[in-house]
Image 1 (cartoon, rainbow, N blue to C red):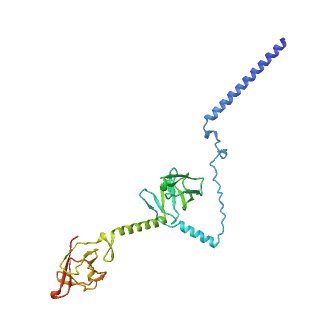
Image 2 (spheres, rainbow, N blue to C red; image 1 turned 120 degrees about the vertical axis):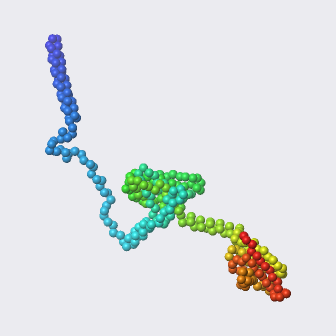
Image 3 (cartoon, rainbow, N blue to C red; image 1 turned 45 degrees about the vertical axis):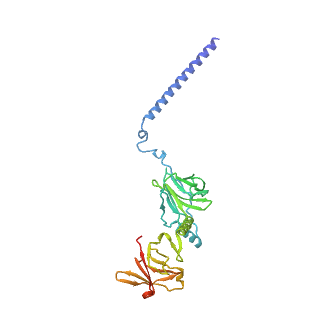
Length: 325
């Protein structure tokens, strides 16, 4: 029994010595670590710079995965490329509407969307147009969202275009139920086109047709057949006074600002036509005229006109005076 107790006491002593030794080593290691942290980096490196090359530097440049190997084009292919580049380079100047939209004529040239990081470019399509698909050449660095404004026939699709960086250039194709849009996308650090729209050739044609129909309708409302001629009633002046008696006395006198018209009664169809004299300060001056469906037509405007038929005691005379309008 005593022997077993003695062996147990020896084992306890050995365990205590091992723990003390281990604790001492831990303290030395911690002290060394503190010393290493407290020493500046330049004091830790050798004075001759040995080992500096082992420190990590800037990352190497990204490899260019696009091959430089040229492709030989045929004459037809070179011509096609030339035509495409000529169209893309056309200098058709855009315009601007009252809402600040930069307007491109669709199909006249290649529109450019100028973007910048943290900004949004709004490309508005034609009202009533339905979007099918948007394909961007560099979809990793260009973001395109779709929004809408209006409702019914006035609903418009808006493409909200954002680049993730400056110095980017790519292309985009937008297909709709009416047409195809080809766009050039470029980005720069600052400065962008916030709102872009289009004008369309068919809109111009439709506008011209609608305007022509409107003008024709307005002309119909204000035009009447006077003296066998189509006259714009808004431009006619009827302020004339007649003095005298005669079987052929005019039934109507008017002018359109350029010519004077004297309408004679139907009874003059087979009778003698009067001569026409214009009263001036120097005296009466004979004026030529032409007749269209019993209407005497004179070039010019006159304050006083005399119509005379016959001579002597058989003479008949009508005096016409233009009143101020």
